[in-house]
Length: 235
Image (cartoon, rainbow, N blue to C red; front, top):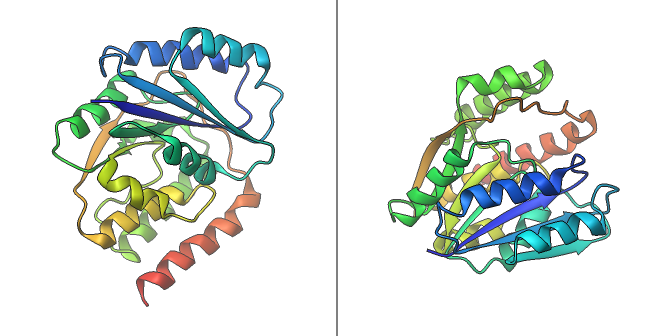
């Protein structure tokens, strides 16, 4: 079944293009080589060079690049990629591929088997040993708020690996949050609509993955986004 892999990209680490090529190649057997890669460059970056893009194009013939000059956020970039996707299954993850190929394959296999419309990666307990303390606290507080205030059956909405079929693509494109809580908004919309079948897929981090510290400047806007979702729930 054709699959589109969407990668939002902003300020990736040096050597990112080699990671993308290696991981995409490892996944090709899982989806039978019938896949396109959509790279969304969310604003300019010193590490996104012509050399890096040439390397990707030479190794991934199905690569499509979407670019614009200003940074708008991960949610905005991911929507741009999904909007351009042609696959029957659409999967998105982070540019550094923090989750194992087996985890990504499990998302694909679950969707291609037809047992669900949306496959949501959920983190195991080991995940929290890889993230800074403050980020760990924020994640757990968000999960508590998601469960108690939004009454959602799946509380781990922020895992950077999700997939869905064409039936759910329209719901994803209806999200409006441009930064990190777009994941929460998407899962909330899927839950509220009660027409899409969702499945939680346990995923595993790769070895030696370390996440960046939380940028405190994004906390206030994201708190507003959460309150907006809560307000809409109670309307």
